[in-house]
Length: 373
Image (cartoon, rainbow, N blue to C red; front, side):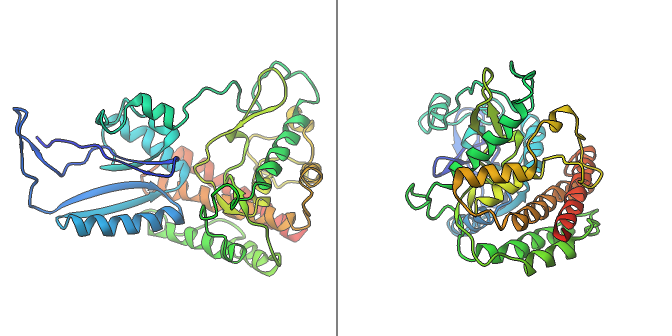
């Protein structure tokens, strides 16, 4: 039987690739000895998150690896974030994953028991926990049921705290903290519509997905191109700034942490604020927004009140926020549609795919409504 190897490739402190079940390499003779590596061609399957920067990195890594190992053919498959989480959760425990899987540092410890043990001389589990900051956070994901849930002002505090945190992140100078190359700042505004429209069109390559049925894709995309701001301010983007990725302190309505930075990059931080506001519920929204309203949302500040609070805290002009809000609807809708496309091709649970398709449809309805306002 073939001996299985584990290799870790680390880019910075956040990205780890694990060779989870690599079937090429030395043979196990059964008595502790090894024979030479096989000469026949083998295929190395790699899974990674779908990201332009990762695709560029893997292209270079793949070419170099194949040059050094001419009998190995590397096949890289990219997943959108939600689908990747689901795929890892189902495949790794069953041993049906790819040979190499990309895991962020904060995921390594969570999957340590389901992956092939890492050689002790490379990194111990204790070292991984220390290096990748696996630490408990005393908090909860909103809306939750904190001690102050009965406080009628709690939802207002939530909205304001999230706006303030987004403003503080947006004020960080990437150059000053060594993140000048964290993304592609050049022509960032100009690239947005074509980049995400290209991703939507790429889903047609999946079996079972005959093309997008999302409403208003052309209309919203054209509006974004026609109303693009003249300039933007490049900063650090969280990339998925929403309730699911923040934690609040249990004893007082204060933000405790922003988590899950896997989609972080460089861009205009106003997109984080707009992304957060796509989750808001307001009376004039199109029907079909999952979760509905209710007392919690009745006490939340309006989208405009959150934007005004952000402006007061950050000192930034928010005149372009209508454009960024429509962009957030456009981008998030396309990302979520990817899970539906994968569900149709049997690569994700259909229930999840249909739920996210419904939300993507609502996002395009809201984007079209906002563009027409």
